[in-house]
Amino acid sequence: LEQGGASIGSGGVTMRSTDRIGAGPYARLAETPRRKAGALSYANTKNLPEAEIHRRAAQLIQDRFVHADAVMRCFGPAILCRSGGDPSDFGDVNFPELNTQSKFLVLADTSTPQQVSRFVEKFWGLEKPEIIISVTGSALDFELHPILQRAFDKGLTAAASAANAWVITGGTDTGVMKLVASSLSSSGVSMPILGFSPFGAINEREKLERVYGGASTMVSTKATKDGAPLNAHHTHFLLVDSGKHGVKAWGTEINLRVAFESFYLERKSVPMVLLVVQGGPGTLATVLETAKKGSPIVVVADSGGAATAIKQYIEGHGEGALSNWTSPHGKVEDLAVKFGTEKPLGQLREIRKRAPISPHISPHLGQLREIR
Image 1 (cartoon, rainbow, N blue to C red):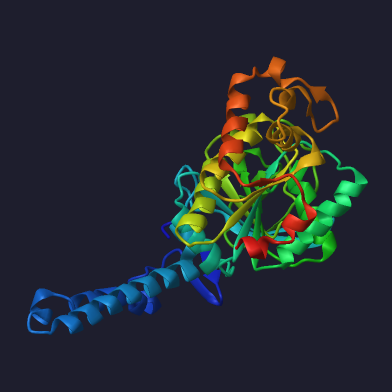
Image 2 (cartoon, rainbow, N blue to C red):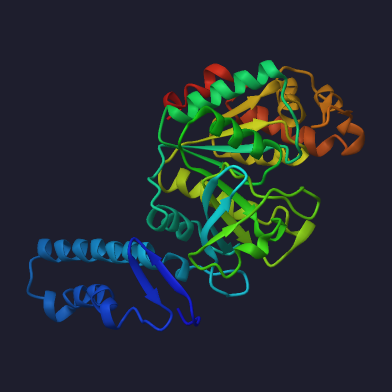
């Protein structure tokens, strides 16, 4: 709020950078908890029955929550910031090639999942989901076999429409993120598709800086090791700013994404399903962490990479699951030679021991409501 020239608004409420929450039209909003707190002082409660004290305490807590929600709903981006302490960039991003528009927020990697959750639900107005479908896998472009692609599209569409679901991916226009978002878009399913992406590895990211509630336009660009474009089929982007750029920024969004998903699973009792398509050695770590939480894992077994390796190991292939690892470009790699066997085999053993994994797709993706 101290930044000159910034204007923050939502739902018809606008706050100038020179305004103060405790002054002018915002005074009543700021005074509510203060007035209620006075009602619980010793002098005001010493002669009251215990039941009345409890009633007033409950009312105070409710008012505090209402106040916090109101502040986030009106001034959400001002409460969050970027890695260097600058105000969070937020607004709309237009993709003229597909004629789509998405919401975006740039936030520090030190943001808490509670803050992000409240922002998403209060400022963006997304309804709390009944289930979260978290997608992991290859970040490199690949194609599924046509028969598997049709099964994937059908199963994912059925799963997404079976409940009020959120789909969470890495947000870029590459690999499994592109595959999932494009599949949902082509099926006509309307639902939130959230992309958690590293801000420092997004192509044309300078167009999203200092927007402060306005709109920006991005065009398709080529993905490189230093960055990738955003996928136009996502509805919302949470762009995590760690202060790193280029190749060093990749992966800096993972901790906040995992914390966000865990917050909904553990604190809000929203079930989560992990969908594994293709993937490299790093995918095994994601699958293992999900297995430790007891969440269901759906493996698209014939997509290659980590997904196929998990299926083969569970079926008793042992180290052979690593020897037949297929890369996104169709190249068969021997991970036992490339990465050694100790770490990936240990991960596969733990995954098999902990996770309720299905190597199929159509019936299980269509039964997410039953999982819930």
